[in-house]
Amino acid sequence: MADTKKILLPGADAWELWSKGSAGWEEVPDADGRAGSDVLVAIDARSIATAPLWINSTDPEIQKGVVAGELAELGIVAEGGRSANINHVAIDSNRALIVVTVLENSSRLPEVDGVPAGFAPFSSLLELPADAISVWRELGRLVVAFTRGRSVVYNQVLSGGEIDSDMAGEIACIAQSLQGSAVTKGIEKIVVSGEPAGSSSPEFLRTALGLPLQQVPRFPLSANPSALGASSPLAPVVVVERHAARRRRSRGIVLGIAALAIYGLLCLLAWLNLGRLDRANESLRESVAADAAEVESIRQAMDSWDALEPAINPDNYPVETFHRLTALLPRKGLRLTLFHLQDFGQKLTVVGESESTNIAISLRDDLANRTQLSHFDWQIRAPTTLPDGRARFVAVGSFRENPFPLTEDPSP
Image (tube, rainbow, N blue to C red; front, side, top):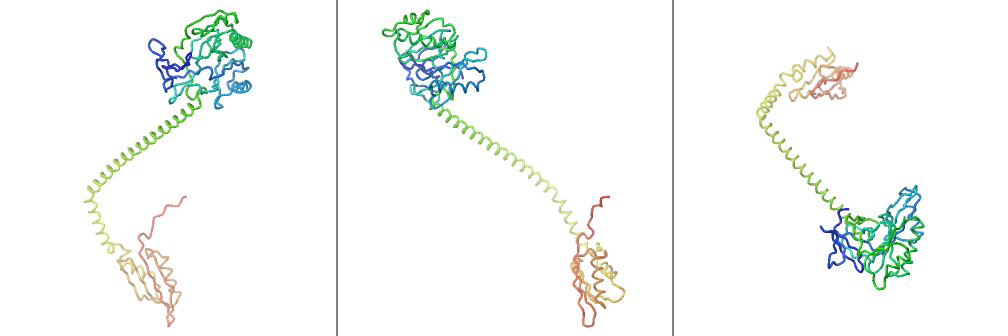
């Protein structure tokens, strides 16, 4: 996360807001104890549970499975059934020492406005002495933390509010348990922060533990504190839901902006294309206007040739058509009674009489199949028999534009 400038932390008796300036960390007076979006929230020891565990595997997936079983055995339940935060401290041969931190109850945390910058156990934000037992007061209760090197391996709220023989014995029992399981390694001293309250006497700790005792006004805050984000296991459920809702809104806004951008781009492309088409149409109009005179002269020439076609096209010339027809007639047994060429040679009607029906049928086949008049499509009725035994036939031909269409040469 970005460099933290504000921390809301559990003070000796109340929540305090600290700000980082040029001179270091300083308490902000008259703070209302609420967390804003630019504030890192330090979680007090009563709201969390820590458990140091040795796991005979360095595989993260195996570690997660073991952690779930160990927490269930210890009776530690995360708020909202969420997962635990795992911090790796040390590796010894094929096993790993990890510290599991669980947010058990967020009801004691200060009110949150929006989504804070992050969350972290308060003990992880302090510069605690290495390989030592540290004791300080949080929100009216005494808290103890054990370090292995500079890493906090255990942190809990003590049963009383004053340092007496009973509390010294409680800390000694915890120290003995951690030392026996090799969680701590060579505790060197006891450090107590703040002035003793009431009848408290840090000397009980020296007597019970047999370690050097040191007293300091206050444990300093880390110069560069690190924390987990608003979607981490240490964030309260309400903050996680708020963070998810904000992400959904942000995603919707981004998608909306993207859709508008795409729509705008499409509109721009359409406008550019319309401009291109308009320029092309204008160029085409200018070209048509420039060629109008030439096109008109060509059209007039075509009209002139169309008018001359009956005279210059043999297929439309009446005498030529009559000659081709008579060439198909037999020398005897058939006579024409009507030869009628209409519409400038576009329609030909032929009526005749033959001595027999066979002659009429033969003429019909010649008209349909011989090339002399194949530029006509023929409609030929069946011959009718006259009273004197002769057969009368009627054939009507419609002029075809291209009686000899070009065809592709057959493949060899």
